[in-house]
Image (cartoon, rainbow, N blue to C red; front, side, top):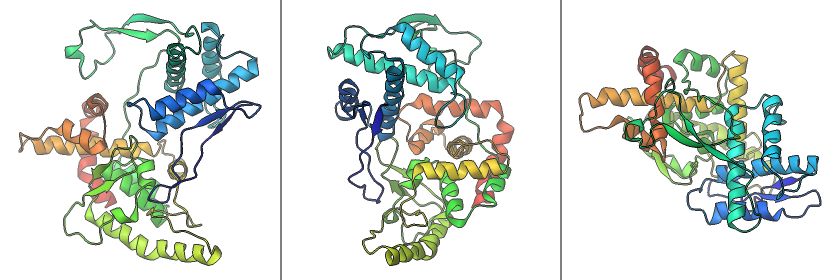
Length: 379
């Protein structure tokens, strides 16, 4: 079967291995040249896709597709719409080998769109003659919520869509209430509690919390909020977050006490141990990985009967922060709440941030309560 490799022979400044471009190998352990060429193009040439996480996702999609090709003995460059449709239908009726859960329709559509990008690039590069995809013009339902920029849409509600994608109605982000957060955090250790607090107090993603370095934590600060620049972000573009000073103080205490003990033990066990700059370490003294952070929170939430992923903490922060900024704007007319939140979250597209306006419109009472209680409950 095909194999997907992620080389990690160098390290970011915080000690976390920096993955290189994913490389796909066939069953004979040879490079799958068209797939590798496209992944290299995406990572090294295409300026719009700078996120290592996106490279990984693209690599995983091609890996799954090549396994399908090999299992069915299809040639990658002579397949058509029927084969892509069969691949889609298998996902619709099957379960993920990784999560053991049914595929989300958004995941299925994401894979189909990734394959469309790959095959269209191959056509342009002269590697194959035809892309096995068709597109049609679709009139959007009037019952669906209008987009943030619907008032400047010159298409008349028409969109060109890939005919192989399936109907999917995006769900709104689901912020957690302070009561839910208290339940999930009740049985967490000090390190994991701090990790959750950093996410819900700043909107940091799990990879950003994992990448938080010691050098970013100031030694002292007298302000209510501390400006901290983070380097490990989804798009690779540094941004500033503003954790409350009590959270920074507790983080320094963790580094001074628990983290120091972990490093000392690791050095006693391994003479060649190199201390990473990452704030949060495993018991073996290694930088905690984003995947481990996600698994930690998922397990803690499941134990309390709360259905939520770690990313729900970012939704919780974003929703409460938008309402807080709206309140501020009543007294500071020059403040634009949505643009400010976009900068804080590090969104490249304002329409991504605008979805939180719909969350507020759905249940303002719930959000108001969260704004009043969130920092008091956690911090």
